Length: 208
Image (cartoon, rainbow, N blue to C red; front, top):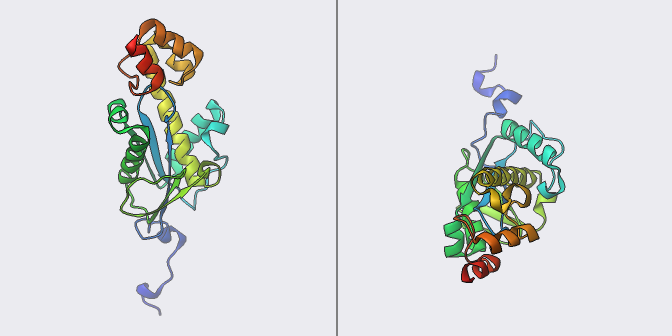
């Protein structure tokens, strides 16, 4: 009779070895281009035993599909974290460095430590694990797609909340981007507390 130590691991037992080397996290951001609001970043470690259908670049999905996948990702992933860099940090550091800061916070906030991190784009945050930048990774790597969806949904929800505080700017519709309606509101009302004062259209409205 074989001892228990020599018995092969069952599938259930193997699925509990999540803290062992080999986990890969996908990272992406939302909100680099808008004139207002924090930049959001998400890090996701998917479960190979619970694949998620329909993952894609969040920008190519409808709002309804993103919301549906958002709940599925949170339910099925091994772990995830969404983090931000504030408007003040964006103005102090610049948008690139603030984005990398949000990404680092998202990775550091994961409950499980990844062995490798895959980041959408061509720049990497400073991390204490191996990392690789992948251009258009949100359309190539499932975990990056999942991260893009979490970051996008979280930021869109933030915009809806701010729209209730500052309805004159139309955050619910343009999500902070520099649309004509948003630029007109800036000209009429000036910037609010959530506008990025180092971004040219906001800076011009301040000078006026």
